[in-house]
Length: 280
Ligand SMILES: C[S@@+](CC[C@H](N)C(=O)[O-])C[C@H]1O[C@@H](n2cnc3c(N)ncnc32)[C@H](O)[C@@H]1O
Picture: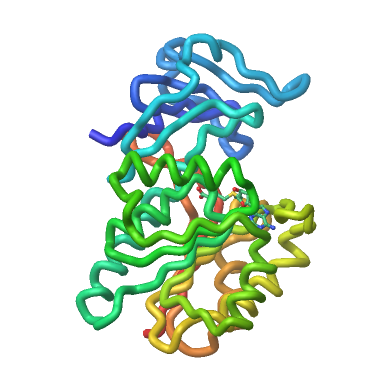
């Protein structure tokens, strides 16, 4: 059984199991009432954004613990922002990335080169590596890149060809374009608002356009896919689809909502959007 489970959602919250621990966290889009009321008392810890950012019951949790989610082993830890080091709604995208790369590797004579931008704790990087890709993992946060490297070790992938880059995404892409470095498969998960390594401001509404034009510039002549995901309100599947279409006039684009699902009879929770371009 997978170590992640959505147990229930409602009243602006979600109840999830990560390994042996059950967490109750905010979820603005869960505007319905909960379905499994009796389960909520089982939470080991809860996080709230009312009156500042606050964990309750954090002492019930270890400082870190390990889980396996869709084939990727990960270290989890509670952060002061209520994050844990994984966004489980992306886990079906890891599966698709792993499978597409495996298939493409069977057809190509050279290994597929996968680029993960805003790569966080590395779930997608490690899934791509499991599919046989040579990977490049880029994030502006030194701490997150270190966390992703620990995850690589947990998956016995520390000897796998993965470049670990701490940098601002647009600066990195400009450099790769100048050097003529190219990638066959690219994932980008831009934040609504972020900071590059030297404090460069990232505002999705203004900065993503440049990122996408640089992504197009570093895409190889035999591309496998470009995946764009977002958690920003208003960046719906059609918005992501339209953005990709501006840069990729031929080929097929699919898009949809990222969902937290799992337990039977539990409502799915929409958690952002994805769009994928493929050459045909
Ligand atoms: C939305 S999270 C990515 C989530 C991750 N892709 C996942 O689904 O698990 C945003 C990440 O982008 C990084 N980031 C924010 N601004 C950045 C920038 N300008 N350049 C590089 N990374 C940035 C943050 O450090 C953070 O790890």
